[in-house]
Length: 394
Image 1 (tube, rainbow, N blue to C red):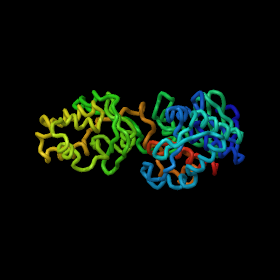
Image 2: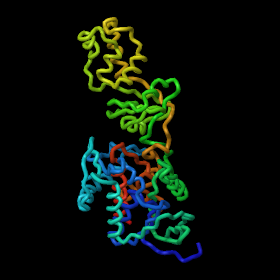
Image 3: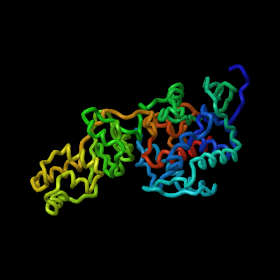
Image 4: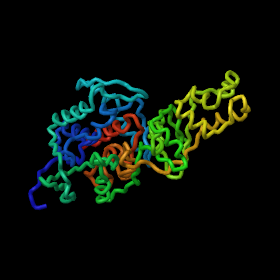
């Protein structure tokens, strides 16, 4: 690094949700901020989220909706920047929104509005944005972090890692944050795909014939359960209920699917009393899509008409349908994961400021950190909250 550096108060690496929020907050506090990203446009994951409408927060956000090696870490930032604060920002920019379900808020129009809003907030703080920049070198000397790109050398007493995790690599996502954190002695909690479809082994091939069929279920893994839709795919299981439970699943664990979360006890026995001459497949078709009813009936293999089945056998069927076991053999990986679980260890960071405890001036925010939210706007709320927490102290 021989050229004289451009001097800033803070350099933020990563122009995603967390980086944009952090830059805007710090810039509007009078800090001279440089925001760098290797992508050719900011907020790429924002743009594709929520089917292009951006599920930008969740009204029911609480720390219990997040996974981390330290489940208490997120409390401080989430408590100081809540969904209402971001909603107020959205309202000030005249962006129309709606609640879809389960507290999930979406733009009425386009996710582009959220990116434009954040860029406008950055402009108010005179943030310098540099896109399509490859980071060639990062080092710390003389109280400053020195960043070398193809175009310039920049230096600042504060450096923020906001480059996310490796989920959705086709969007340019990498593990750069972890390499940089390790360079400065910060530990990493093993990253893994989260909010990701699960794959099933060959012996479950019968269920692959259901590709495209969905059903309202309760998916359970250990003590954790979610009630939402389950979608069968040619590789295994997906849909909101499965994406949620995938964050809690580890290799070798079974999951259980309750296909009948609404059905009362003895519903199949009652059905037999009312229509004794129908088959199990016909009975299941009254509550399931036909293709799913056919596959389940085939697996359950009850003889003939319900009248030929004992009440005990039918109750056994109800129990199977209420806790149908699946043994996933993996996930569809980072390519299909909406977020990354794990990341920069929270043990290395201040929960109030997101600053590294042993490297003054170094911060980590957003998905790069070992804090992972549920599906439904929770991860964006963490991006806003953690970005705000760092931006307030830069």
